[in-house]
Length: 340
Image (tube, rainbow, N blue to C red):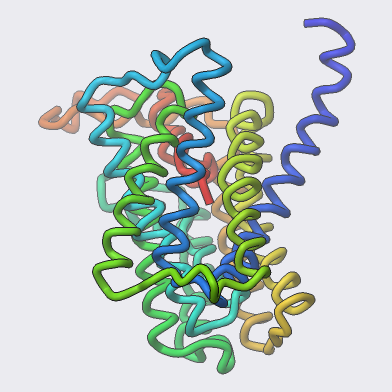
């Protein structure tokens, strides 16, 4: 590596991290403007279909042909499943929820994703550290406060239920995508994830009666859609994937508790939302819990218990270094779940 490259890498890391912080935190505001005059599911469907086509075109041009997009049918199927869980059930429902709640409250409830991932690990036999469990309990305490008070009147019970379901769907998709055979190239995987999610969202949206009337779409909604396609689904994701290969995963994982703060501030500044005391208190508690989980899981472990194959007697499980075990921690963002 040249000295120039080595010297510029720390700066590039912070540029890419700043993009992930700000852009992913701002997607909630982008959705707010999108759904002003575009139906939420149809709008999200258009977003992901267009983004998948653009990303596929870029990959084909850079690789000299469409061969880069060829993957085995099984991996194509699992990528599509991940896309439906992550982007249809997860991201797509955020637009529906924001019809009934503020962007800041939605972002704070979605911040519970790393907490759910710890719960899934526990359910599958991976016992996290005591401090990780403490972080989960703290985070769920903040989640309960926001849910029971609906953010101090910043959202309806329906909106809260929808966004909690979206966070759960995103968590399931994140958990499974780390364990299913996916396309080796994360950009190719994202093409099929976004394509599957976009088509599914369009089918569901049109099926439930959503219609796009072009003459009624405002300039703000068009700008919101363009922003979500270019920055939310392409620029930020590219930065995220680059970070995974060039920065400590503990640093990359900080996006999980920075994005909600960015979303709340932007909602207050540009959408006229109020930061009620319950949003501030509940948000701080959730961020504290997530921060505790991430900081605990990022600590170096010389020895971890490797997950044993199904049916392996407990006494035969050996303690050894396990890259797979580290991949399942919420402190490391799932490799293919960064599309917002």
